[in-house]
Structures are given as C-alpha cells and as structure tokens.
Image 1 (cartoon, rainbow, N blue to C red):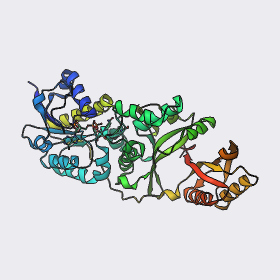
Image 2: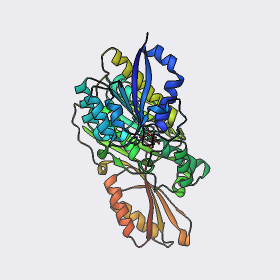
Image 3: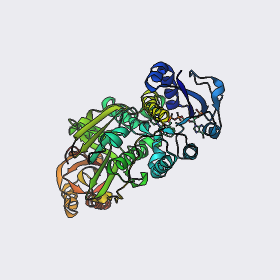
Image 4: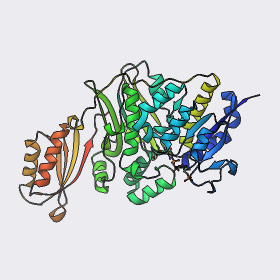
Length: 431
Ligand code: NAP
Ligand code: HSE
C-alpha cells in the first residue's frame, strides 16, 4: 500500500487554490510518480468561513497557521500566504521541526534567503521555491542544478506577469492603465497589493533570487536598483513603437569586474528582440553562460494553475526526498561579491522634454548633453507652441552623466519639464 504524506497548506487564495486543484485532479498519476499519496489535510487561511469552491473538506480550514505547522500529522508545509511576516516565522518553525517547506514567496526568499537556506540545511530538509520566480517556468532548478557546472555571466528577464500584461495591452490596444491593472487583478496575476508589481518590487525580488543563484553570492532585495512602470506614459509607448521598440519591464543581472550589477526598470527593447515578443502574463528569462551559451526559458509567469504547477512539482520533489530520507541540492553562496552601483551603468537613453518652441532651444539642449559627455544619436521635435516636445535618443552613456544632464535640463529656461527618461537596451543580447 502507498505511503501517505500529509501536506499543511498555509494560504488558500489564488495560488493555494491552484495547488489544491492540481493535487486533486492529478492525484492518481502523482501517487504513481511519487510512490506516495500526497494529501492536503490542514489549510490555514484568514477567513475559514469563506466559500472557496475547492474539492476539500470544510473542516480542514483553520485561522491558526501555527497549529498547522506544529501538527504531528503534517509531513510538509506549502506556504502560499505571501508577505515576510508572519509567513517567515511559520517557515522557520516548520524547518526547526524538521518539516520541509515549499513556498512561492519571492519577497521572503529575496529578503532572508541565506538564513532560510541555512535553517533548511541545518534541519536536513528541503526548502523549495521554484514558484517564487516566473510562475510556471522551471528556472530555479536549472540555475541551481543544471547549470551548476557552468559560469553564468548574465541574465535578462521579463519577470513580472502583471506589468507585462499591462504594457502589452497598453501598447497593442491603447488600453487605459487603471482598467488593465484591474483586469490583471481579476485574473489572479497581481500581488495582494499590486503596487509591488507596478513599482518593480516583485521583479526585483525575483532578480535578487536569480542573481544569488547565478553568481553564488548573497544578493539581497535591497541590492537591486529598481524603477517601476508607473511613469511610463501612452506617449512613451507610441514613441517607442514609432522608433521600432517596445517598452518592457526588464530585470538584468550580470557579473562585471568581480562585482554584481542587478537592476529592474522599464526599457525600450528593439521590436525584433526575442524578449519583445513576450506578451501578456508570459515571462521569459534569457541566460548567458560561459559553456552552455545562450539559453531562453519561456512560459506563464503568473496565475493560479501555472504557479500551482511549479509548486506541485516541488511538492513531488520534496516527497521523493522524504521517502528516501534525503534532501535536494543546497544553494551555495561561497563568493562574497560587491554590488556595482547603477551610476556605473553604460547604456542608451530615451529622453522626452517639454520645451519652449523657440529658436535656439535645440542648440541649448544639445549643448547641455555635450557638456555632460552624453552624445545624441537621434533628435526631433514633436508638436509646436505650448505642446512642443523634443524626443532624444542618446548613444551609450554613463548613467551618472545622463543623470547630471537631466538635472541640468530640468533647470534650463528652455525646458518646461523633463517628461520621461527611459533606458534603451539595444544590446541586451551581446556580452
Ligand atoms: P492571495 O490570493 O492573496 O492568497 C493569500 C492566502 O493566504 C489567502 O488564502 C489568505 O486567506 C491567506 N492568508 C494571508 N495572510 C494570512 C494569515 N496571516 N493567516 C492565515 N492566512 C493568511 O495571494 P496569492 O496570489 O495566492 O499569492 C500567494 C503567494 O504566492 C505570494 O507569496 C505571492 O507572491 C506568490 N505568487 C503568486 C503568484 C500569482 O500568480 N498570484 C505567482 C507566483 C507566486 P483568506 O483567503 O482567508 O484571505
Ligand atoms: N504578481 C506576480 C506577477 C505573480 O505578476 O508576476 C507571479 O510571481
């Protein structure tokens, strides 16, 4: 007879519902593949009385997560509550009790990864978090295991489904930002507080996790330079399209001169770029490695069932390890690498200026760029009189020089306001 492994689920919202559904629908095959029956027997939620329409006994719900973690009949914990605390405390307690944990909580892993990895190692059990980065896409295992013999040099990713969905619909349909964000929430893509998606927090957490694995070092969430999509306007999207670009929120991590550079921000990508065609809630991660060369991972980055798929995969891994009293591969953070400041970045920039429509304005603006060592690749005027704008694309320039240019432009009497500044990542696919 098959052994039964009992799962305690912490949280049963969008992702928890996906996990319950997949474990129920695929129960027979999962038992055959694992050699054990995997049963959810306790579920902690905020509101146990809420009707959830899931194939579980209503008596399983409790509002006391600690009772689930500490129950003697629970063999593993799946944490899909989100947030740093109290979720982190429950995970630490589970590990202390020798219970393996599967989590989708990128915020927690990006903030406390090293402590949690150490706790899991000390307890001799697994801490699995495939679903924390890019939903359904298998990327943690490839980074931790498949590429363990290689030297990763760079990662470029679209790591947030909500913002990719919003930017796709804004650029393809001219849709309104607030309306599309509401749709992303209704579809279960967004975080409980969607600010984390649009301000780049969610993508920054994922980028920190990937950079840590790629470069064998501890990259904390706070190490990631971050800008969100809130300031991207319909004009920016139209201008990008006119020039042959699309705007995407990208996460880029690389190792430069023994330092780790890691950043998340919206960027112009050339339309023919493989990441430019990643639409809707899809994510993609492009990895450059010394020996493997270029690799691309693509799939659904958010949503109940795609994320549930990644979690159930981890649950099966953990179950197999439990049956063999083993644990999976550990993270290594054996290289203490400093973080390279964003000021040292060199890339191209798009700058949109509201200007006075007068003779000499272009010359003054060009002089300001030149005085700060930033060379202009393209410039033209849109509109006239009160709606005159200058659109500029620079050659590659140092971020600190571009910032100094923008500060000087903001004080210039010819410039009414600096409407937009975005990075242009034309060379993301070259080393
Ligand atoms: P969600 O829909 O808001 O669900 C959160 C669940 O946790 C709810 O069932 C809630 O209970 C419960 N909960 C929250 N705080 C609790 C507390 N203090 N005590 C007991 N229960 C508590 O969130 P989600 O979208 O499923 O996301 C869950 C996690 O997965 C987050 O870490 C998120 O970043 C991650 N993730 C999400 C996605 C996605 O596509 N949504 C993808 C990858 C990773 P009630 O139902 O009673 O309110
Ligand atoms: N809110 C996240 C996103 C969920 O939109 O990508 C997946 O981590």
